[in-house]
Image (cartoon, rainbow over all chains, first blue to last red):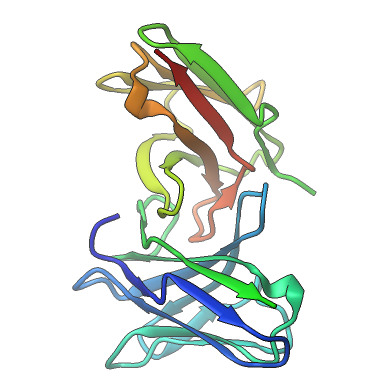
Length: 115
Length: 111
């Protein structure tokens, strides 16, 4: 998973604040995926982005969550008005191309704690 | 509705012996299966994969077996080493980009 950089590694937010999670993919990778892992559970798909485009956001909650992957800069997962239930580990992965046969490389994750 | 299930939350194995991690799935459209390994406070690391057209794939100490009729796959690690202690996730894909993950099995290798 070398190369995918997520920051911050740990983020503490009070209820109602905004959380911004950043992901810089492996150089040359144009496909980014965000996953969320709740305690004692597997990773759950949230959103798939290519440069400047959201391909599939079917795993994202309809409200308060948004994601972008601009032409320049990292991908951002934004959570507005955080609630306790948003506390989780958020993982970003990147791949050079889409498709299920590609092994995506994962970042180390951002652990969000809402207090 | 769990499409990918890892029914053993944890597994303890003696160093040097074989570790067998199991995974069951329900969606017959899945055509690609992957195993990831995860250490605490790190992201998952790809370990080994298998296409549905095969029933076995081997890479060093790691072998994945796929039984399509039973919708079951397993990861064999032999011989098990202390560094293998981690959480192992099974994931599946249906020619799409989404990976559907199991809940993971924590493998503990005892010295």
